[in-house]
Length: 208
Image (cartoon, rainbow, N blue to C red):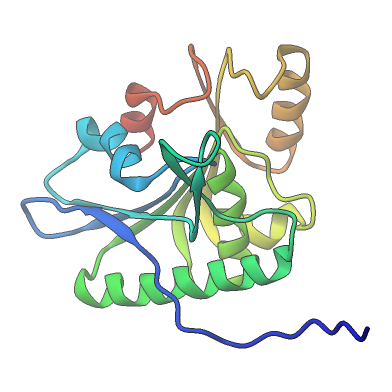
């Protein structure tokens, strides 16, 4: 038996959702969701921070799957460890194309990129490899990609902030201070809130 792996290029799509302000757009905020989330529900966490001049853009990871078993609730993911290089390439390409379309339709004075949980790593890779410069990169309860030097993506943003809840179940308390100290030494600002692995509205409003 002669087994050979091959690849072909196929058309693909990126689904996204917008929260459109009533007035002229001055600020674009790209928000990348976490593992197992869908933008149809994830965007609702940002409804309370909508403003008259801020456009929120929620791209959705291209991998969708049943969260439990073979039916029921569906979630989305940005990548897995299998053929990760191709997922990274396609994520960056898709986000670049989305940014080009959004920026042509909504010229803005300010751009923020916010990555929540798994979306934070994808956002960092987008800044490192893609065609976007932003005013503020917010990594929310996320781990920076170990395959990148922090300077590869922080240099693309005028300001970088790491956000973490005091009771985040994915970041054990004994490790939080060491992690935060390391980020501070790299010039990354820190925002803390009382809570778990979730979006905290008051903190989000203060950052935006």
